[in-house]
Image (cartoon, rainbow, N blue to C red):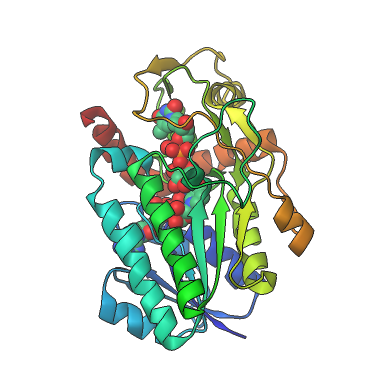
Length: 329
Ligand code: NAD
Ligand code: TDX
């Protein structure tokens, strides 16, 4: 049995990771989360109290981070400012949390010699042309947005701490996640909840941008596989062969919610909008024998729509403020 410190565990992916970890293993889990606008405490409701604890605090708080890292065996770092649109409006918190916060964690991991897993994104590689080969672990870093640049910087810090100080770390870079407990600022939950509210979905630019969708349960499952069986110092790409254009996704959502498939609007494009992400996850398959279990995207989307319909009390309190922020940008 081990004790896990999970940063950002009140957010979307971290919250799903903690729920799954407590179901699958007997470990103790502490979440360290600053409870920013993106957090939702109720994601962590009804977890076993004797094995789970939530501590409110920032990964930038040096003293707190040292104390918490010292008290645990494994550190899994999800905490981040995660939304590209927000990073364009105000990059400062992205530099602070994603770069300085990761630096604080790494220093504590180094001092206390703990096992560390760093959660990152495929956006560090920039974007691909429509006909270009998918990202691999050898793809050059070329981030486009303040968000992806700070995530890229955090990956470089981890690699340097592995090489220079010999910390026991692994890194994963995953494609776009969808599923339950995702904040309504993100594309899929934004459009589902807009449709529940009778509001027409909006697509940035032409709607032809491609994202490589993966169910959040597959992402968290792969992270656990890397923690359990990954080689120290290695990077693993996580994906599930889920490439779809935003237009295809919105048409699937509209059809599943019994609306005309052209009932959406095109709006001004996101500045610097990456055209396409796509992940080659064969290293994860060949080395660790990992495979995604939720490959049927249409089915996963239908289940996600049902989850947002059934859990309005989870997202409703944040919906109006999220749309007001979009309207002011
Ligand atoms: P999220 O925004 O839903 O959750 C982030 C969590 O981090 C929130 O609970 C927030 O309160 C917390 N947090 C923010 N600043 C903090 C700070 N200074 N100290 C402590 N906690 C802080 O994000 P997410 O989508 O769950 O992403 C989690 C991680 O997974 C990020 O590192 C992100 O880069 C990575 N990732 C996400 C996706 C995706 O599609 N969602 C894909 C690949 C990688
Ligand atoms: O209203 C919208 N309309 C729209 O067309 C929104 C919110 C988004 N989009 C487009 C932009 C992207 O092409 O949909 C696509 C997905 O957008 P987001 O949900 O904002 O995700 P993205 O920018 O691709 O980044 C996500 O995946 C990688 C996560 O937010 C990151 O944290 C993760 O690293």
